[in-house]
Length: 387
Image (cartoon, rainbow, N blue to C red; front, side, top):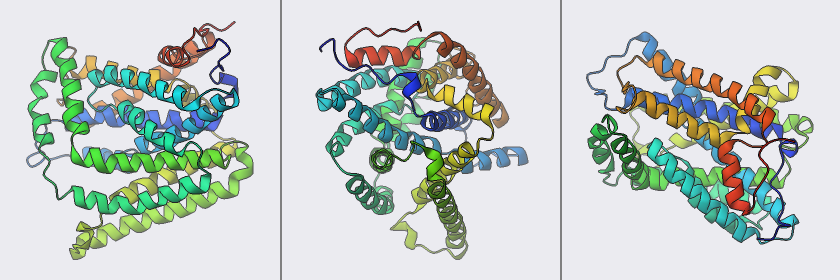
């Protein structure tokens, strides 16, 4: 590629609120990924959680479960549009550049899958190529398509639930590999676990990917309408999104309780669970935007922002730390500790990453993994250390 190829977006050109939202999503990532180890291999028919466990499980379910990857998916769609526009303005082939970038993301996904069986990078790399079909689309086209997908998700989810899915049983049989003292066994578990728990698991393969792509299109649409730039002027729209998404989430929560109480069975054919997840995600994201615009909690938002600037590095590091703590190669904690241990550990790791990210970005232009990925994408050496 020519030496004149455009440089990646510099730190001082980034949209702060987008990094803030990425940082918040990363908090959900580490909390729920570590929480997964509390649940793995546990017999839920005999397990009797105490009050604290029930409260923490309910809290994480409401605030974080599936909210983090749906938010990251929205932000991926936004970042896709930013990147494609940046490359296009320099007069280069945006399609070829982005396809190459997704190839290298897939390579990173392979490494990350070995560290943790719940890798999400592979999904973004593959779905990102499909998103190329919408590169020249308008915000209206992308948004209408997302609404069609949104309406289809409950039907897809209901249909997929009628299909046989043995991959989860195979996944459970792999647990001894992760508890092995042999590092190669642990890494092999990550790869095989990713394959059986996600890549061929029908609910994940079909339903989750449609949900992800719906969120991609939302993020793409937000870029097209220039939503995150000059956010102060968008406060009335942020408030509107906040109240509407909150109302939808409350309505669906009450509705699901009524369905359970009266034992209605029509939702077997049109499962609305992801609508509650998506409305809750939008409620939380709009609440963060609203608070950010008010200028409050500046220290908190600064911490989220610095995490968001190194999303890829921090995500993979969280998984590497988890491997050393939970696997048999490391401390072998697995599912032996109470729930508060996993959540407290996640908060500790996140806090340490905030301080590390601040130190690193005071000296360097990019996170280490971001730097490697960008160099591979742009096919040229980029300065790491700040001048």
